[in-house]
Amino acid sequence: MASRYRRRAFLALAGATAVAACTPTPPAAESPAPPPQPTPSPTPRGAPLTGTLAVYSALDEPTTAALLGAFTKMFPGVRAEAIAYAPPDELETRMRIELRSRKADILLGGANAHHDILGKDGFLEAYLAAPAAQISARLKEATGLWTGWYEDVLGLVVNSGRITRELGGKRPATWDDLLDPSWKGKLVIPDPALTDAGFAFLATQYFRFDRDEAKTLDYLRALHPNVLQYPRDQATAVAMVARGDAAGAAAWGHDVLAEAARGPAMEMLAPKDSSLEIGAASIVKGTQSGPAARALVDWLVGPDAQALIATIGGRSPVRALAAPPAGSPPLSSLDPGRYDRRAAYDVRGRLLARWRTAAGRQ
Picture (tube, rainbow, N blue to C red):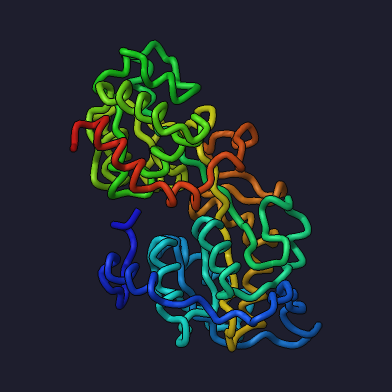
């Protein structure tokens, strides 16, 4: 949610993207490059860990500060500072602009798709974190270019009171349940052109219809009469549900579950075929703080950080030993392979055009 990020020294996104498009990826050798080799463990056994870490964070400031604070408490010889906060697509653009003048040592958070493309384009260092042996193969890149440390769901936040009073207590189990006439004027969807949550909702429908754009448009047209508003940010959508102005809204789970003022009137649901993303961390190639960066990746997948993640950010840990955040919907029934953020961005323009047609915004 862009409104929650503090931007530092960014060009206008359109201009930055244009620059990035013209910026060459790191030059490749004439023969195919060998696969990246994992780096050894962070520091020799028994040696004190020291260094300075410059972090690019796709998380909000309070969550980032809490994580880095806990990490540096465990490793007091390391000074870790977030020097930029932005959505992951903007951090990806920034990395490309800074091709020959890297400023970050590590990328913290954001969908693994962004880390994956940066890694394959040569911007990241491969590192196989030892604790990552305890997580599923789908949660990490095979050569160590990125490591997943949390999961997040794009689902539906509902107002329990309105569900009980106006819908007989029936909670939507599928996205198609929202087409029922009983939902008329009760739903809010963050604007897909302006919000990550709104676009993720749009892409969710595209993927559950097996990438059939015509069927996606038909669904959006059928849904539109039930949509009260398309707010310009997700925070507004969630607040409308909290106040009872709307019965439900599409939202990222962590933004709902991390709300300090969240009361029993709000519930987070994961309808069938909801989108599930892996949040990753990766090390910037060429960092001068390699041992500290590798230690941070180890720590994020270790038991201490995994136990902390759910309590400070509303995200679901990747280790079974850590409890999910309170109120989190079960994620085991979701197919993490269905939602492909990179593929969604490839057709972003067409999907937004379909939505504008359905919402009468042409």
